Image 1 (spheres, rainbow, N blue to C red):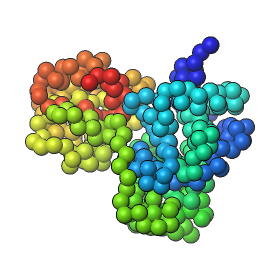
Image 2: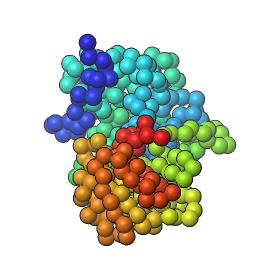
Image 3: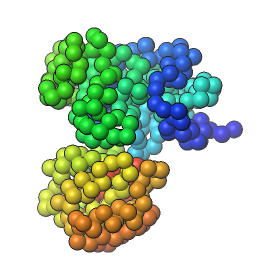
Length: 341
């Protein structure tokens, strides 16, 4: 019999008839609405959602649901491979019955697994946007917006305000909304708004000061391995964040894969500050730009540009070009390279 994980990988990541929560609501109803067994912090935004969700969960004494993964599917549910297999198998029949997408199935598996584990609190990372996302079924008492940049504009809107509105649509009437600043406070009228970060979100959830966030490392989120750095920066703003934290001097050979719905030129312009040698590649994600197209765009910004379609070959090539390597542009690329030490 096909394993639950193998079956999951056959599912479409995207709905064929538009985004919405109808299938998710029906799937959870069949499962007994496990998402109601615990309280949650809903984490939305562009950059840093997974890290924030993990640290919030650790601080409030709960579990985190994050995406995408780098080290394996189980990473999304904070479990091991066998635990992940059980979690998906638990929802498999009902997911088939409603025609759930891959992300809807994963989200339902996380909610049901957390309930089965007796989790009392959780931090739930939204997948795409918020309003029509599969996670927008939890009625979270606290919503945390990390930041907003242009992304998925064909689905979320062409301006930062439109995108912020889609993300903040997850806030229920009684939710406390934690924002990085006051720019989009007007989009959540009637809600209690607090300005801050993940720490403030955890404190809002607990109703008391906590002093500091718990540490909670995640693969692919600024991993520094000697002279090699890996980070899934996938927007110009994320690249700016990364550049501020890179060990100096900035003389890296950059290896990158970029998704076609991202601001490729904006990302490449920023990454050129990290070094003047670049190796273009393509991750296994269907939305990844061909390596040749990434290379053609990179020539505007980098002195030396090489191309290797296979990520492992690209990494080997980069290591031959210089002693310091930066792998970035997409968490999917980092996932492809998770077994390449």
